[in-house]
Image (cartoon, rainbow, N blue to C red; front, side, top):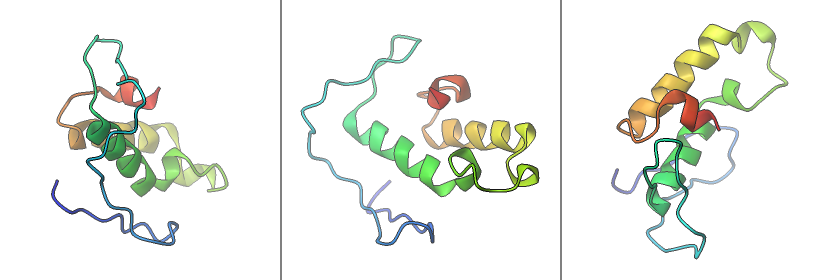
Length: 90
């Protein structure tokens, strides 16, 4: 993902991926794989794009179980399978 911007209208300014280290230890998934800082930023951006995953003020018909499951699968796919949907949800 080169120079990607977040186009979510709920986020006031474009968010760009950074290659700087945060100094925070790299997260470990349940499968004992490690995520880089870039992977973590990408995860955050992908979740931000999918409003029903985090905006509980939306009507239930817009954030039903099937929709939320499908969105988590999409997040996992965007991360090239580095996290499965269940791990990404954590």
